Length: 306
Image 1: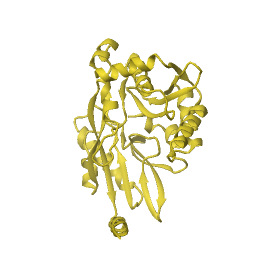
Image 2: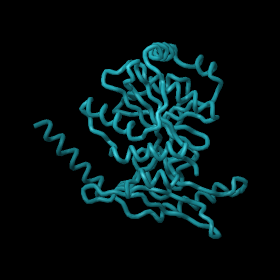
Image 3: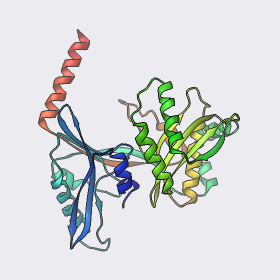
Image 4: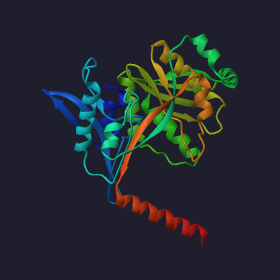
């Protein structure tokens, strides 16, 4: 599997009953898989990635020594795309092993680039020197106030995450049951970790959930207590990066958030000495849905100017 997100146990939980996939066989052997989640919105079918799934896209299994690998992969991915069910909108972020979006372009998809930050394994002292000075100081100060502990309780993490969301008057994007299930299953398989920052009274101020595959550990979720100790998330990220590198894995920050023209987590995620890397995404929207969106945008503009 190219990523942990392609594994069926992950998809079955995060797909919340709506996970499906198409496949291509050659000589009785599966050489290509394309998982997805299909839902309904305003009566329209929407095909996208399951929740908490940072990257997906085609998983290809062909001989790496095959001189016709490029054309073989193009053919397999094209056959996968042709099997996808009709949908008003399709959106997928592709895993970093896929270096080309040509089969999607040929099938009429728009393609674009998201960005992530990857910290490759280096000795701890080297990485510490590569970090931004401000980040090192924040980590030092946080380490004086909290203790780093590892947790093995998916329910406790899900509860902490939900309670902190509620305290900030925000909407939880994840079902508590689903979050608890995927965190618990990941931990039970030895494919992830929860790291918490606890004050001297035993109160958790922040926690991070990561998951990994053979080569990469992904920063998927963090939560911080309302008015919690400053720098606790930075400290936990540093601890996760060290543990990933000790196992020979790179650490993927799993995306730079974009809000309009801003990147609100840019300074945090680039403060650890990593490199910004591109990640392709593909999407295709039906003409009918595009028209609906235009009408809706015009309606709200007229309403706001009235």
